[in-house]
Image (cartoon, rainbow, N blue to C red; front, side, top):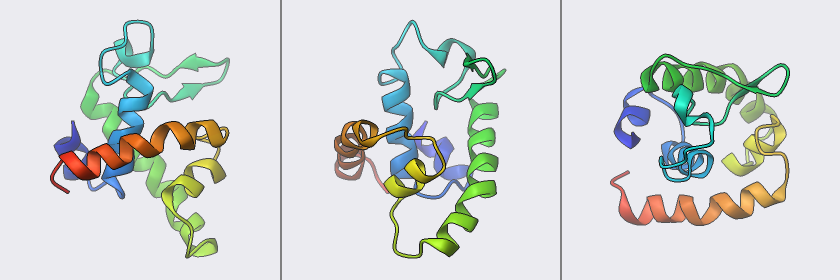
Length: 114
């Protein structure tokens, strides 16, 4: 999964794979959006899990989602980190998400080739 995220050209892949780990219970959840190939917990109107036909489609969606938001945010926040980006664009709804994501990001940095 990490290699697919990197191959898609997604920025900050260590954060993005950590998001995947967080949203899918390390790709093992049974009662989450993973059954729809939704690796990142995207929701649509009506608080419904967005459905994808494959993991690759979901990764491509994340890339386009990021491309649409990140450059504008980065221009306004040149010193901000990806945690702040996620919170600013409404992906992370609070500090709890950041607290839960930080150890996963650190694990990725320590255990996966960046």
